[in-house]
Image (cartoon, rainbow, N blue to C red):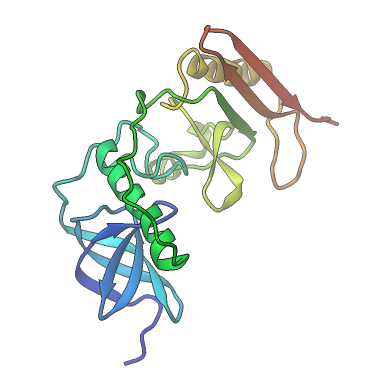
Length: 234
């Protein structure tokens, strides 16, 4: 039978992690990259992209969760494009990522390397960034739950991060765990002030609107720089 896009494989065990937030499985000697899973998960998957050497798939049903799983701390996990391995404990992330580097050098680049010392973990698992850039959007990304609410109850303006693969859609962020406060307070207050004073959010498709981006920089001394990027609003 010709393998095709949309094919479903059942009871697939995830064995490793790969690049770009994907994990690895093998079915009938075919390499399959799957999003949203970790090694040890057993899942039913659906193929969404196929090439001669590999497939890409999404999970349909989790038959068994890996013992290595962790509970993501972020309410936006799974929709936001950042922090794609929050469901995998930090110490496990380091082990798998080190193995990725070793495999790339030995199997792909064909380089002989000495034994690699373990990666030194960061002292901070969260709140380690000193700069974040958020995007204003007149038509933000709506979650499935929000799509079911009446139109007159939807707040369409958003201030946050781009949805992966969608230049024109921004996920409204309530709290980000990458940068220390008062970063979150600044972003939320900027959005509140803009809406209250009828300042237009940028339309990424039509390329119109006043507010485009807000950039927040912080230092170890507690100093802050807030940069507001605006556009002509005719």
